[in-house]
Image 1 (cartoon, rainbow, N blue to C red):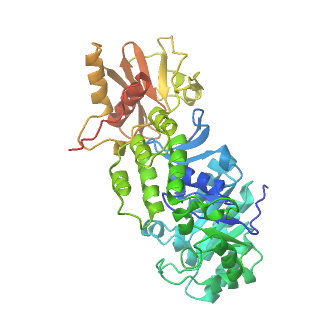
Image 2: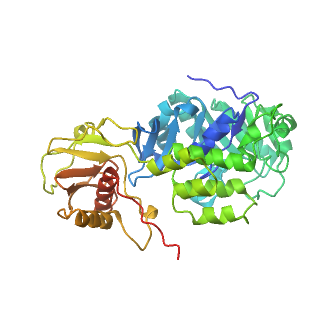
Image 3: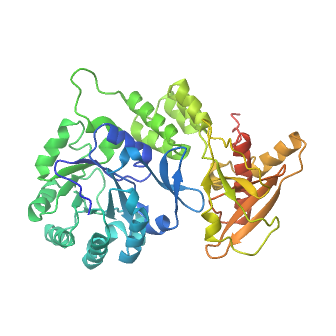
Length: 470
């Protein structure tokens, strides 16, 4: 089994919508030992398809609705720990096996106090189910080739907290993250460093002390003080790292620490480089800004509809702005069934496996175009309704406008249903060529939109309509 050293480790803790790919990379650049993903629910992870994204040089786990649930790259190899939300040992193992070769470790979330986790029997709901905890962790430890960790909050009594820690220790996990607040506590409530210290002294499993942001940890030099105060092997930093990712770095001797503006720019550059969704980017920028929410830049960021706008607002280089404009998914070629009419037959797995990467130009466009009438240009995307305005043009409408302008026949669509997964895939027929998508859609209507979007991207037509500034 691969090993991880948590002694004196300083790790980026899991935060929903924050510890996605760009933030994890930024934390690693500044010296984080390991980085945790946001919590990913086992059900959702199991629905994803593993995709090698050649253009971005990433490995993506893509949901049927087109959402990238988890993206990772070589920069975080051996450093990224995927946090799993689960309430079932068998399902947890299936989900962990799905990503086992692409992460350094698996963490089980046993501390999240959010209602959606509690109702699903996950997160902090597990704190009072020691036998379920034992089963989940033992199953993972015994069947995975990578380390397993878990993260908890303290219980109402020290006795119960220590008893749970002993159960967790018995499963053989590589580390135990402990947030020093109870499930019912608020972030403003005191963090119980004394309880963390008692846990660290009672078990041999390395303890990662958490909950010290703001109350103790404000600067890099506070990290070691917090570690010694709690007697822990290492420290897990969440909010303090979100506000200042450079907190992992020792203060440089010959230069100043990066300014907040520099950190924001570095984050945006990583978001652009790895095609992070604008909604996630904007959310993380808002959280990084913390209390600095009255500036003109902040207001403009809230209104931004495109990554290019975000780049311009925060003064990114022309090179990064251009990359934001060019950022598209890889183009691929695929052999499709020869039938050109709707069919009730299911597409076989062998057809899916025929997917092969096309030869890409610097812009990511396919330069070896398909010449066979049975070949199509296919993009590894799906139609995401939230990406498009409620009132306005859709991919199908834009494609109709394009065809009218070019005096082409209007597009026609072929939709195939996968009855096993209850999803749909469509092909758009435009000017003698087929355009399709590899990410299934949840409805026929969305599948047609995805096919139209694939065609528009390949043709270089603008994808999202400009929002009115009136």
